[in-house]
Image (cartoon, rainbow, N blue to C red; front, side, top):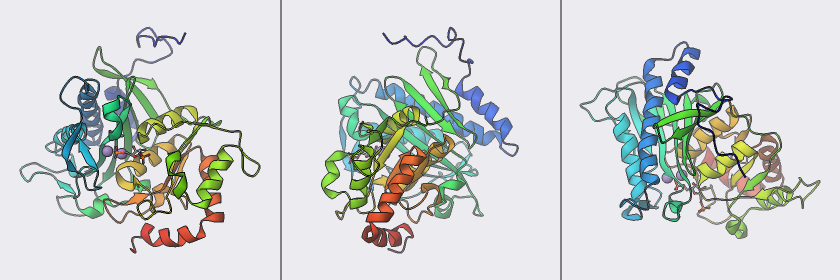
Length: 362
Ligand code: AHG
Ligand code: MN
Ligand code: MN
C-alpha cells in the first residue's frame, strides 16, 4: 500500500515553502536579479494553475479535441494547445517584463503589443507538450525558458531569441498528471513543487533534484525502429544488454509526452531519446530545439545529467531558426555519452548530412 502523500503541514520532512517564496529566496542568490525576473517566474506558476484547471476538467468542459487549424510544424492544434498558448501570452504581454515571446504554436516572433511597455526578458515556450495524449487522459505538460535580451532598442529581436541554451537564465516545465507539478531552475539547482489544489498553492516537494546515478529506464518510440540509424540501433541494443559489454537491461517506458518521459527519467534515472531517422522527415530529429530541448537540457545538466544531439551538448548549439529541430538524447550522462559513442562510430554519413543543418548552412 503506497503511503498516501501527507498533507504538507503534517509531513515534517518538508519545509512548508510555496513556489512564490522559493523564487523570492532564489532572487537573493542572484545579486543582479531584479524583482521583474522573479515576478516572471511567479507569473508562469499562475499560468500553470490556470492551465491545470482546464487539463483536469478536459473531459468535462468543451476543451477537448482538435481545432481546424495547424501550427507552424503542420501539426493539428488541439483546443487545449490554444488555451494554454493564450493563457501564457496574456499572462506576460502587458507586464513590462518581456520584450518578445516565442511559442511553438506561432510561426513568428510574438511582439509585445505597442501600447504595453517592454522589458529585458525573452520567453520561449511549448504551451502544451504531448498534445496527442490529451483526449486519452494521459499526462501532458508545458515547457518554458527565459533568455535575457542583449540587443539594443525596446523591442525584442530574433537575435535575442536565437541564443545558445548555455545562456539561459531560467527553464522549467509543468506536468499535468496524477498531480500537477512545476519544476524549475535558475542555474542553482532544480526544484520541484506540487500543486495542492485545496489551497491553490505549489508547495516545495522535491528540493534540489539530482538524477539518480543508477538508471532504470530508457524511452524511445520503438515504432520508428525501421528508420533508426545504425548508431541508434547499436545504442538501443546496448541499453537492452545485448550489445558489446552491454548495460544491465533497462526497462522501456514511453508515454509520448516528452515532459512526462523526461520527468520520470529525471526522478528515477534513465534516458529519453528521440533520435534522427534515415527518412526525409526525421533526418534532423523531431524535438524543437528552442521550445523543448534547450529548457530540458538546462534542467538535466543542473540535475547532474546531460543532453546531446548525438554530436555534442544541446546547450552549445547556436540556433539558426525558430522552428529548428534537433535529435535529443537526455538523461544520465553515462548513457548520453554512450549514445554519442555509437553515433560517432556508425553514423558518419548521417553526421556529414546533419552538421550543415546544425550550423544553419542549409
Ligand atoms: P507536442 O505535443 O508539443 O507537439 O510534443 C510532442 C512531442 C513530445 O512531447 C513527444 O516526446 C513526441 O512528440 C512524441 O512523438 P512521437 O508520437 O513521434 O513518438
Ligand atoms: Mn512539445
Ligand atoms: Mn506543444
